[in-house]
Length: 172
Image (tube, rainbow, N blue to C red; front, side):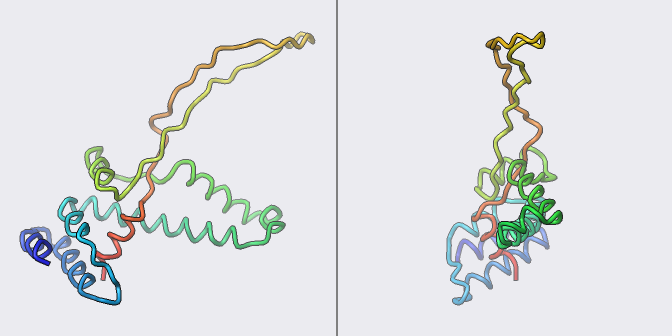
């Protein structure tokens, strides 16, 4: 408790002071069994802006998890015949591939990644379209050099299990 109390006493931001209070209450609650020494260190390392964005990410992540669970709980036949479930499947696939965007500066995103609270999805690999064979009726296969690149602007983030536990311990 000493590092927790020491760090909490040095916090100037009122909102983060509330998070320290919640953490203290949760750590002494034996029913929650959240007695990890990493949580005070994590809270000491982030700003209120980073905390709030992490919390927003957790909300959309929970919604995504609920939709995924709902989708996969349906019978196989219903999943492919129901238009609403088809739309849910498209959203699930989109999040799986792209993640979520976070409204933070680059150094703030790097800090949350450094702490293991979020993970960045890898960039997509783009392959330029190419064609084999001829259109003149003679289908002879041709080898083409591929132009491969990364789409550095089109990938997002996902919250980690540590990030979810961290938020849990910082809330009443």
